[in-house]
Image 1 (tube, rainbow, N blue to C red):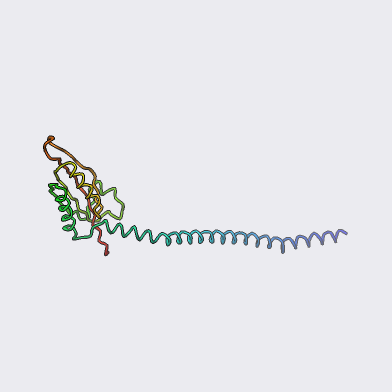
Image 2: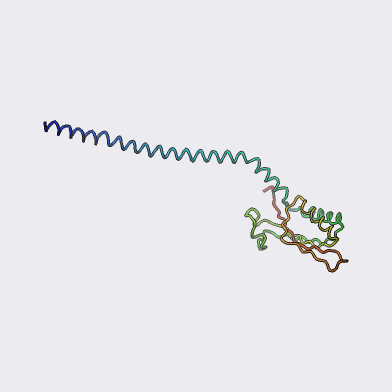
Length: 183
């Protein structure tokens, strides 16, 4: 009887070590592989969703790029801009002294330092406006500058008047960036 019990115990240990333990190891390895595959598929799914959103938003991005190109200036277009500004001044009976200074990639201006990296290092103009005229005419003039198809960055405006009979004086500097769209 004891030999039968010993044989059963030995067979049990053999079955446990040769069959059950390797099967458990295989199950654990399969679970690890399945978890890894599941994580990989989830990551791929997220990437695919982001790509679909990007492709879906591409048209909107292209429209925004075109708008940006339209409000920026390319090299050698300063004469056109100055002409437009002079025409606006004449239209609104504003006496204007306009000075345009080209800054080639300089970023020393505090306004420039706060810009997005896309504009840093780009050439830009500083237009110095020294205008005088009737207050209402000056405001209409400013409104039309605002409606021009360019993006002027104006940090501050200075309005002054010597006395009630004298014209209103408006001084300000405006920064206009130059972007070469062909590059």
